Image (cartoon, rainbow, N blue to C red):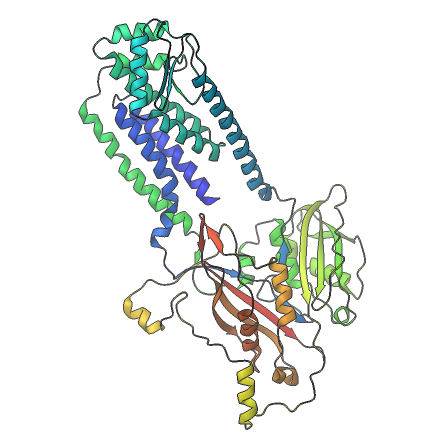
Length: 561
């Protein structure tokens, strides 16, 4: 999306430069080259970010918290799985854009058929060309000059310019400057052909243009001799004195403009840069003023706990609720549309009363629903209630609970002095190599410093996020189902949060796995092992190209005693 915005912004700037400084000049060939070159630059300058890309550039995200067992009270560093709200207007923008492209392509296709039909049929008074195919009524007055005019169009490949403009119009149909751009390019075509045809008899040629003002113009894709919309400008430019050569400096004046666009592209493409690890709680606090559905769902999901009795009783399903946020910033009139039981309604009600959640909630009447899911069980009931009349549907929040594994088989716990047992365990679950180096390079930090390479660049967002197979919800369930509690951790009753980091490469593979926060007893290594056994993701995309994305995965361990 950023690429499209920048490209169309640059098109507007380039056309503005042409309109202010070049449209009255008689450098017709120069103006044609300028319009085509600026068209190319407008769509390549937004890609300038990649000239400075290397393997150190990654995009950093915080994954949803995976709840293994019950949930501890208070906020945690992480986010919950949030399903996008279908009511968000932004979600429909790509669909609207594709629909517009489809309509624009259909209109161009109609012009193609009209051009083919015009080339096959002969009409009285016609005079136009399309690439090397010239159609002129030789019985008409001035047919020799008209034929010469069309031959100039054909020799200079003006039809190729028109075809390129049709493609650009399909992809940028929403930008009105595109249509002015095409008109300016067509004018330069006519100025070039008129100048070559009129030679030293401009007045006689101008009379021919006027006499043909009501002639047959032909379909939109051809270069017609008669075009009443351009007639006045063509005659004025035909009789205009030649521009002095010193006015050519105006093309040179464009260089600072292009340089400014290049810097602006780099700034826009790197605006999400941040350094080091970022706590998601701080991120939410910094965006507390942004009142939208996503921020509210993230805030609420951080404080809603999956109660121990609900996990013990296997309670799961969808809990829908409505509320109203007043202008004073408080949430009132909380009502549940269904019942889940085991105290989950009370947990949601308590979370809605927290100041952090109320600050992120949208003003007015809203409805949301929380999907409580248990690992190692089938989830059959996925029906969601519709929003009552007058309520804004915010979408879904997903919270997973982990049912602890059955008691371990009777076997002695591994001891440090038991070398044989330790060796067997290491062979079964080899400890992953955790090397904290510069992301994307298998070199020690000291070596990187010696080479004088730039500091790591960390970004907060990409246009298209990486996606695991089956979506983020399936990935969270996979982690919960396949996390293997180390025997030592079970015996020690370890509780807390384990955090691991990894990078989704351009090919979707997971690399650079390292333990950020460890509870010891093999809990961090178990998280690394479950990531190593996961499938490839679809890579993240920025400006149409795959990029590397860094993720942090928090896992909360809360074994039931």
